[in-house]
Length: 183
Image 1: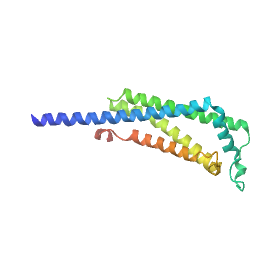
Image 2: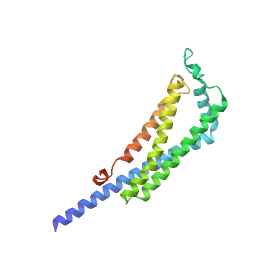
Image 3: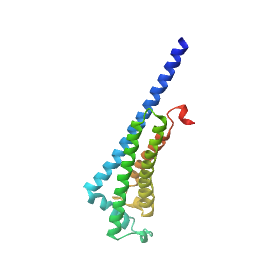
Image 4: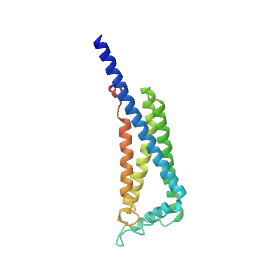
């Protein structure tokens, strides 16, 4: 009789630990989705502040004076607006994908199959966020347009923080919740 009670206890504790981990994953995804949507909202409500950021980055007007890569500069205001619009759309889509994923995770906490399927939305949201902040801001803005050389318009450090958070969330979410999920 004692071994049956111990077995039930071990199964119960395993279930509780798995559920807590799934709740943690759901909350992290929801919060990251809210973050991306808040960034998007701020860019819409205070359009000119970050439009200036895009303008100075693409025009390369604040990089080192001796920079021989200034031929890459884009001086067309239409392209600045288009780039900024794409950034805002990517932020919005990132947030929506993460919210869909986070809600899906919460709704399916007790079903391994459904919970793991809901992770796909999170993966897409994290990938898009990583592409925006790593590839868009660090690779294109930071390196191609030499944003790192600007004293005032350098967003590489902030973009790095965001890219790391997206990768952490993707890896944390992909982590199995139990031994059975590893199969």
